[in-house]
Image (cartoon, rainbow, N blue to C red; front, side, top):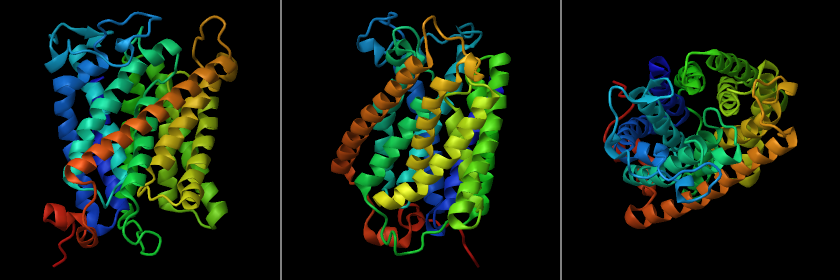
Length: 407
């Protein structure tokens, strides 16, 4: 669990930072790296002060009873109150569990950065992240993972490592942010090609390696469940990378590096909710579905609807999360090669409805909450940099430094 925790932190800094940093224009690389690094610090503090309590305080919860405590935790664990050397979560020290979950709280808001890259004020980003973490992330963790009496836990939603909590949650928030901020200046007419795909490939590779901490670590034990989660993560990711590559090859005539690494991330996202319950065959099918559907969402759907989701947060994370969450309802069953032990009377149809209900709830709740938060931040400090600052690039205009000082 110590190793898994380190791997998940490694996914944000440097993994996600490099993955996103290579995809923006050279005048904005530092702004993206800065946002990822600042979020890492910010979420560490918020998780310690009250986030862990809102997510995992189980006071007032009762199996089968829906009350306020089903939606969000209380304040009994504020400042990690009650955390001792001997405290356990399952079979591991609670201190390790707190840190492991903290790394999830770090990467989830950082994912949203890719949707509004190159145009949001740094001050607005910081305020937005505080509010979004408080209103969207911590309650979603509580509803899905905090045990008997939690809303989606009681529904029976299968989400092993964060399909709803992390990817649909961040992905739909990214789309809302992209829509409310509007398109980048010159979007559709000016070239906005990635400035350094080498960095993006390195970042994607770090995400792939780190994701074993994300998925296998979510077993919270070094056992057979973690082993199967590791295997299906690798199978799904490799499959999705090829599926996106071939879809792009057929559609555009040439396979690209950006395409294959995006496909890998789509596969990682798709297997996340399913990692503890599906078998190898299910992982292959989820990989094909995630690779192809995320490719279509990030290209054809985006072009058709005309929104500027800078680095395809919605197309990869929200769509991939939905694909994985829904297909978990099919491939978790032993009859479909899964390793889940369904409750008596559970059928594929009934579990599909449970999974769909979890997806729809997450989409609606986070869409509405994110829109309100962005409106509040806009009223407080304004969301967008000026046209002059955007033209100059956020590195110089907001942080007074350049990514590349060519002598």
